[in-house]
Image (cartoon, rainbow, N blue to C red; front, side, top):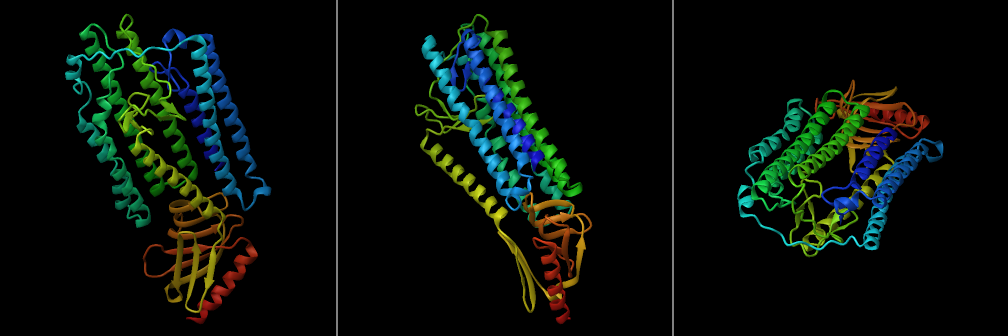
Length: 453
C-alpha cells in the first residue's frame, strides 16, 4: 500500500506540474498572449505552484509511512484512505489559489484580450475529417477491449472475475462513439491564406486523432496486462508497477501531444492572425464551466485527450452530482469494509463466515477436510477487498486455486476448509484477530464437524 501511495502521489505531482504549463494560450483556463506568458511574473507564479505541489506531495508521502506504526494497528486501512483522499483534495486547493493569482496579475498588467470575430473558412470546413485515421481504427481498438474477457473465459476463471471484466468493453464503447467529436474539434488558428489554414488543420486534426487512438490503445493494453497478471502471475508489486507505468505513459502522451501542436503553431502561424478569445471563468477547480456554451460534452484543453463535461450545463450538473455521490459512496463502502470485523458462526449443521458484501455458508457434508495451517497466503484478488490488515472475498491463491478468503494479516495462522464437489470456490479459508482465537475456533469447528460424520 505504501509503494502504491508513493507512485500515485508522484504521478499526480507530475500531472499537476504539467497542468500549469502554457498550453494553447492558456494557463488554468486563463488566456495569455505568448509574449506575456514568457514574462518573469508568469514564470514565477508557475514555479511557485510547482514547488507547492512538490511540498504537498512530499508531506503526504511522509505521512504514508506513519500508517505502518503500531499506533494505528486496526486502523491502517482507514488511515491510508484518509491520507490519500486528503492529498487529492488538498492538491487541488492551490489550483484555485493560483488561478486567482494569475487573474490578478492579468488585471494589474492590463492583459485583457478582446474576443476576435471568428473567421469561417468554408474550404477548411469541407476538409475536416479527411486527414484523421479512419474510424475503423477506433472500432478495432474497441474490439481489443474484449481480449481480457476472452482470456478469463479461456482460463476458466470464476464468474466473480469474469463478470467485472465484461464492464470494460461496455464502458470503452465510448472510444468509437466519441471519435467523430474528437476529429471535429475547432481549428484554434485561422490564417488569411486559406491554403495555410488547410495545411495546418490537416496536421492538427491528425495529431489529435492519433493521440486519442494511442491513449485508447494504452487503456486496452493496461487491462490486457492487468488480466494476464491476475490469471498467470498474481503479484501486488507487479500490479502496482503496472499502474505506475500506465499513468506515466498517459502523462508522457499528453506532453508529447501538446508539444507537437505547439510545433505546428510555430511552423504555420509565425505571421498569422491568431485568434485568442478571453476565457476567464470558463474553468473552475479544473472543470469546464461555461454557461454560454450550450454543449454538454466539449473537447479537453489538451488536444487529442478526448472530451470532458461542461458542468454549467444542466445535464452536466446532474452528471457531476451523480459522480460525486458515487465517489462518496465508494469511499464510505471502503471504510465500512476496512473497519468491519468477520462474523464466524458455527451451527449444528453449517459453518458460516460473513463480511460486508461477502460471505459463505457451508454444510458439514460439503467439507472434505479441516486443517489449521501457518504461513503466508500468496495470490491475487479476483473480487473482494484487500487492505493493509485484512483480505476477504474471492481470491485465487497459490497452491489452492479459487478461494473464499476471510483473513486478518496480523498473524500467520489460518483455518483451511477444503470443500467437496469440485465447484468453485474449492476452499474456505479464514482466521480470527489473534492466534489464540483462531485455535479456539478451529477446535470448536472440528468437534462439530466430527459430530456430523
